[in-house]
Length: 81
Image 1 (cartoon, rainbow, N blue to C red):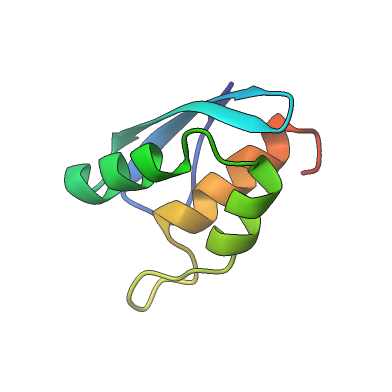
Image 2: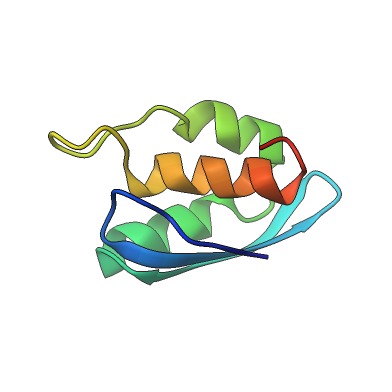
């Protein structure tokens, strides 16, 4: 599934979820080290656990962040958007 984030540097988030388990995450654009780290950390994690840990995180003065946008993408992936 592909998600177009808003309010952040990344341009696209690709998410693969099997049941409630995150199988793969790929960010296009954004801070490469941070987005690769986030993607690596959430693989194998339960979707709901990942959402609860990342939802609401902000970046500087922005009202959102790449982790927050990933939480939105995961909600969409499981039909909870």
